[in-house]
Image (cartoon, rainbow, N blue to C red):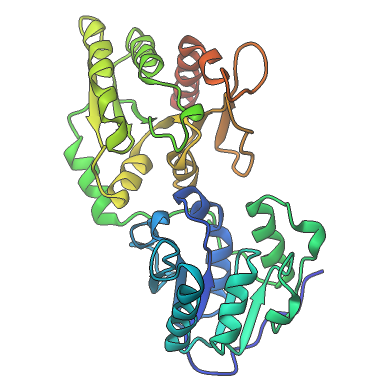
Length: 348
């Protein structure tokens, strides 16, 4: 059941949104909730409290919903009992008027309470509800719900209106223009290739990505944006060899982005015609910037939060951490990507 719309906080100070899950994808999953909370507090400073691995400072660079990002540092400053005291001290110094905790942790709920935040909202799925001053509380039966489901239920029960495109990442116009100018001479379609992987069992591998480039290059010219970190830079040799094999038929350009800032990578993905790659942060980002995305789900459960994500599962057998990714055929993936590009071209 939804509550009545919230009144203004009773005290001066910022509104803090706490989202402590560490990954970029975790941040993308909570975009709708962050934007809804921010929109409900016009005229207030909105501060996002999260971990540095989320890259939130870059992700919200073009987003007016968040005024400031501050870090929770569980690896150092905020680690252990002394770190908890430091966290309380840091929160108290912010003079927070109201907080929204998008996580079930009792530790953060206690820290916000001890920091003297007068109005504290949270899921209430595991933490004693005394740490929160306000309903709604989702209840312990929702303890194991997916983070997206938890966030969506919470903002609905808070009675927040959902802004248009609340699930979308904003891209700075200057960065968008820079991408268009820098790659103006590169052939279309532009394909973002998600090479990164947080775990080895989710990695499709250089050999299969190379086979995908070759299969697509047999049919059309294209530019492949290589999305990954320094760990995937070693893939480039195999991928370039595949591009060279089809050079006599079609022009293939590889554009590495292994050391590019996250804000630039987001702009590149927003300019792409399609994404294809591992189940990683770049898959979530593609959906968040409105780009159709093919996710390789050989080892992980399919993400269903966005209609822009199309799952590609093993050709034979089910999902498996042992060999699921190896059973996804590059030719099958190429056929799906090429068909999507044809359909998009027909639709205009």
